[in-house]
Amino acid sequence: MNRRGVWAVMLLMALLVVMPKAWGQRPPETHPVSATQNIVMSWDRSALPGDIDLWVPEVVLGYSADKSLKYGQLHLTCASSTDPRMGACPVTGIATIATGSAMIDVQATERRSGLRTNFSVKGWINRGMETRICGSYWLDPIRPPWIAIKDDCGGEPSIGTRAGLLIPVEEMSRLVAGHWDAELILALHDDLAGPTVATYRFTFDLTITDRNAVSIYFPAFHHVTPLVQLNAAYDPVSQNIGGRTALEMCLYDGLGSQAQYLGVTVRDRSGKPPGPSGYSLWHTDGGSDDTRRLDYTVTLDHNGAPVPMPNGVEQQLYGIDTALLRLVLLPGMSQPVFCVPTPITFDIPRVPISTQQAGTYFGELQVELRVPTVTP
Image (cartoon, rainbow, N blue to C red; front, side, top):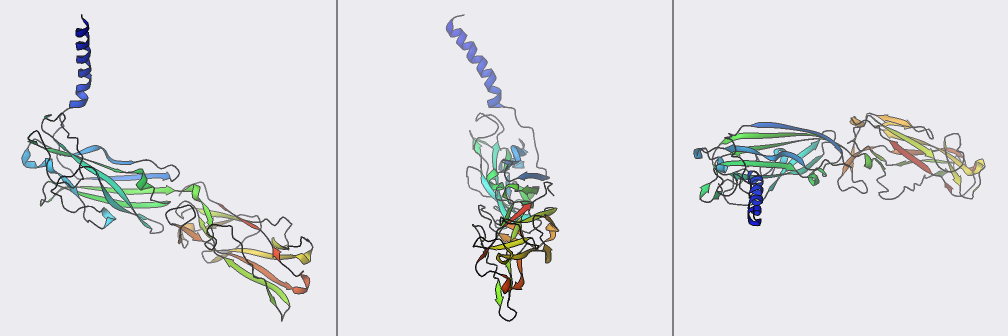
């Protein structure tokens, strides 16, 4: 065999390999059928799941050589063009040509807090042909789902339609920690003025955690360590000193405020052994005798009930899933979240002024938050 003959054989073999992929098999006759799809997923925001495929690869909505069925112009619509509760997109087909995919707005609701956030579903359709006149049974251009006119190729009209739907990963990043519900309903039509020939319903049950964002938030000190004035006041009548100061504090569990409990520990970090109350302020002159120490107590307010906080002892706060919530924008986050308000109160019991050295007293506390490892 000469060189030309060898190349001819090799080319023929390559065509035999490539042709089935390029030409494919003719799609079977398919008629529209209504369907419901339940999407139940869980993930942590530190490891998003990637694009969520709803109809990928594409689902054939209808395909038939019977041109009276108008499957070559099938299109999808929403119940509302503005209300995203069941999906917002055009409510009627569009009789102009367009290319590319399009976005459908969907509203998600967090069960615990009622917080609402919209995300978008990416959708498209493309048309099927009766023959391979243009190289394949499925045409290359994809179009927005509500395009209601047939495609044409080589003088032949389209006789089928398939559709793709997915949620891009960047849309899923809009949802903060919590348990989210959402619904998307799409109606299928074969004519601009025709009735619905099939309905596709998608329900979403998404449990999202954000364990890397667990935090103790002080609204009055958004980006800095709190510096709290304890407001020790002198009473000239009784000649004693004491006072009370409350500081707003909010606990974010990274679970959508649905933790089984929150473990809170408060520690005295003044560097000296505290007095009998467990916490002490010390005179700034560096002395360590009793006249240079002001004792105080620490109490949390959890759901309206006082919780005394012994120094270094974890107190477990239950009823997180029913506690009052506060919407805040935590440092470093782009979406607001709900945290559990837990004000912290500092009490300096009144003591005779004669027992204390005049001057400034200073102390240091550390508040720790522990969240159970088990996700609700």
